[in-house]
Image (cartoon, rainbow, N blue to C red):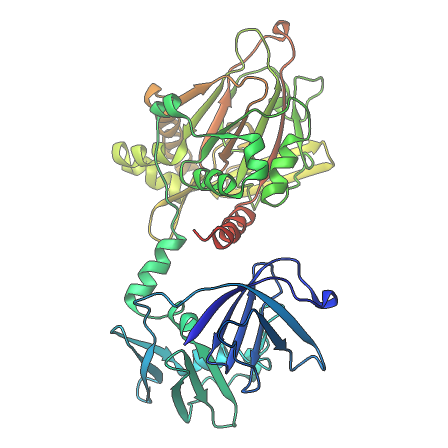
Amino acid sequence: MAMPLVLWRPVHRSLACQRPRNISVLSGQRLKVNSIRPKSSITCLGAGIPHLQQGSRRLEVVFPWKLGATRNFSVLRECQRLEGESVMEKVCLNEAARVVEVEWSGGGVSRFPYVWLRDNCQCQKCFNPDSRARLVLMADLDVKLSPVRAEVQAAGSLLTVDWPDGHQSQYDWPWLKARCFSAQALEKRGRDWQRKTQLWGSELAQDLPKADFSVLLTDDRALYDFLFLLDSVGLVLVQNVPCEVGQVDRLANRVAFLKHTNYGKEFVVKSKPNPSNVAYTSAKLGLHTDLPQYNYTPGVQMLHCIEQSKGEGGDNHLVDGINVAYQLKEENPEAFRLLTTLKVNFKDDGLDYHRFDLRERRTILSLDDQGNVESINYNDQVRDSILDLPAEQVQPLYDALKAYNTIMYLPRNCVRHKMAAGEMIAFNNTRTLHGRLAYSLTGGTRHLQGGYLDWDEIYSRMRVLKTDLGI
């Protein structure tokens, strides 16, 4: 039976990690230490690992691959296995299907392919626990190998598989459960890959998702909720931001780091002579997503208002591009089809952070493998005059672009918000179209600072926060 423990740092500081560990002891036969920091997971195998005695408050861990290396952990608390947890009851080899069949005590049978089990052996020879990387290369893997024996040990908590070459693999039941191939498990894991998209229109202006800047810098749960809203709604208004440069970077560093572009790490939105971007003027900006001319478009944009013009104009327009795309699909299916199949050229060249010449071809609307609208690539300012299309497709494309543009500007779809100094809008740059009304330079300075984050880093941070917070 697995005994979950929470342990604090080891006594030997030369081997120490300063953060707590979660440890499972499987009947004294197997010990697995999982750190909440990367590259700190270790697995110790062998009958020599001591039991944790009843009432003991200290556990010595021996690292067999480090000669003489031991760590003494202090036990902060012990947790009993939750009632109703299902362990392995029976196991058999099914040579016809080439799978190991595991029967669970709570009912149900899981089937684990031979080749997958051998490829994913967790022993030190096959898997590096520090880097969490597979050591067995495909060139060395016998994909037709069959095990000679499979057994359940440690009161149903451990599956051992013996291979013809004498190698033995061991798998914990939670590890196997998390990787089950059943239809139910595949469906559940599939849901984890899907965005929890909440469509919105002008009604969102009455209840904009909000977050407090100082809380985001200090509270991990608030940070997770903020990132979840960015993922699901695609727009969050951050308030109480200091009116000085550098705040975008501060918030980004709580997540990961800012994405460098041809405009640098951060960019300043101000009217200035000889601008490298039309945003650096006082002119109206149409609804758009940023940088579709990049092969890897930035995922999230943050715009921080340091100073706002006191005159008319300068209001931001914000539109849910995915919501508008579905409206287009309903009202004009042919336009929707064209915008999801015909590629448009985007181009931007000039001199800013460095000299640049960026070009990309992409559809205006991108679909996932289920046919759902996944992202928007729309920007009149950098849509190229070159169109790599037959002449007879040009007019239909423009008709489709016009139809999509018309729907996005309908009052029912548009949120209008003039940022005050000390506010920051963070939004999904691959979904939320943003624009700006023209403004008068006589109304004073309008000073914004912006930056980008990539979704890979955001999702990584969310997973880490979920693990740390236990949500």
